[in-house]
Each structure stands twice: as structure tokens, then as C-alpha cells.
Length: 214
Ligand SMILES: Nc1nc2c(c(=O)[nH]1)N[C@H]1C(S)=C(S)[C@@H](COP(=O)(O)O)O[C@H]1N2
Ligand SMILES: [Mo]
Image (cartoon, rainbow, N blue to C red; front, side, top):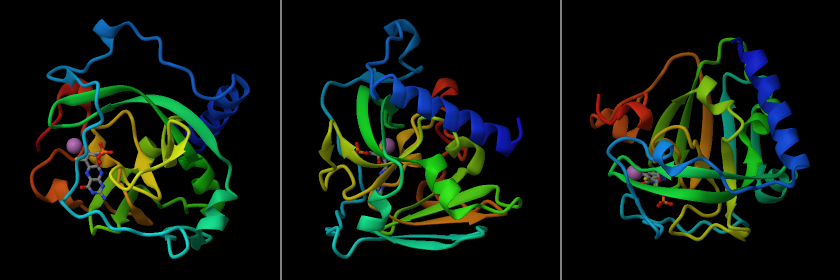
């Protein structure tokens, strides 16, 4: 599938979800829902590098640059003017916990994509966070209709523990692929490994094939 087709399909699916009233509980039978080697948790574990940067929305900026026609630096108010959506998805951490029915709210990645217009040569995306965490994701994976730059969880602004003011959610990949406290999104021609990828974690990170380590 071409990138353009992927992007258009994703936009259409987001529109359908919005029409259907936004977030719904996923109704997948549980035996098909938990990836191999995972355990279901009721709580909401916090995983980070031991640093929780307190960045208020007054000073927060999101830089979007690299292989794009329109590089942008969003202040909070400008970012909130982008289209907003809610979506419910499951979260799978490589340390083996999974959490069902996470209700995230924020800006669909496809809408950010549309705002900055990545060039035809953009293939990879590199995320940098306010705690200096970094992570890389292929652009294709980010065009799905469940990828968000989330600012809300369960209808409330993100707490610091969970990545305030904004974090990336890529439900189909292990959760380390989604940067909390996101500060910069760089579109690139070539791939570049992030914090955990350098330390031996898988670059593809597919929970369904237990693709944990490289
Ligand atoms: N900036 C930043 N983002 C991050 C991490 C981190 O340490 N720093 N940890 C990752 C990992 S390993 C997981 S499982 C999820 C955890 O999100 P949570 O703390 O909201 O459960 O965030 C991911 N994003
Ligand atoms: Mo994780």
C-alpha cells in the first residue's frame, strides 16, 4: 500500500470513529486479545528513566522538523488547534504487562502529518522527549488510525507520571515506541536507533510475534 493510500484510509477511519461518537470499548474476545507472554494488569504501571520533567503548557513546545515541507514549532495553544480525537486501545509493555481499554485523547498523527507535509523521501520518524528519551518508528506504522499525540487519558489531561503534557501512542507496537513528554518529532530518510533500540531492544517491536529483543 502506498503512503498516500495509507494516509487517506486512516483519515477516513478517524472520521468514522468521530461520527460513531468517539471512544468505544474494544469488543475483542480476551483469548485473542492478549499477545503471547503478556499478563493483564488492572493498574496503570509507570515506566520511565527515573526523570519526570515538569514542563508546563506555558513553556511547552513541540518542534516538528526534518524531511517536511512545512517545519513547525507548536506552542500549546497552536497544537490544540489541530484536529482532536479520542480512541480506545490496548497497551503492551515489553516488561510483560498489558493494559486494556486505554482511552486516549489528542491529535491523530495523520493530522500532524498533514500539517507539516512530509516529503516523498521521508521514511522514518525520530522522537525526542523532555527527559532526553528517544525512540524511532517507521513512518508507515504511524499512519494507522490509532496513533495519537495524546494529551488526555480518560477525558482528563495527562498526569506527569504518564507523560504530560503530550505523549505518543502507537498501540500496535510495544509501548516503549511511544515517547512520553514528547518535545521533537523529526522526519528522516534513514533510520536512526533510539534509547532502547541502541540497548538491544527490537527495532520492530511487534507484541504479536514477541518481537522483544534484536
Ligand atoms: N519520554 C519517555 N517516554 C517513554 C518512556 C520513558 O522512559 N521516557 N518509557 C516507555 C515505556 S518502556 C513504556 S512501557 C511506556 C510507559 O508509559 P506509562 O508510564 O504511561 O505506563 O512509556 C514509554 N515512553
Ligand atoms: Mo515498557
